[in-house]
Length: 120
Ligand code: FES
Image (tube, rainbow, N blue to C red):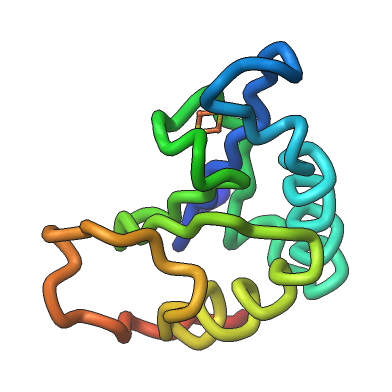
């Protein structure tokens, strides 16, 4: 069984186009998840880092929403173009992508750096 060092949960929840909260699927959640998976595979990280589909993470207005564990770092307004930066800077390098952080993450405090990925 692989031992994942990081998990990324990507909201792909869909609502009607006229729903007041919007939804991550209509903002590109599936494409963001697919890009994450393909880049992780291309980097040889599919046994080290897992990208999973998630249902609604209750941050709909700020979607596409991603949360990264174990750090529990929440990103919002993520687009396909942001995925490579999240992988290189956070997943591999251990540094949060400041410009994509959702506000109000009190558990994060001042922490902006975490252990780098142990590459095999
Ligand atoms: S629809 Fe994505 S967080 Fe709710």
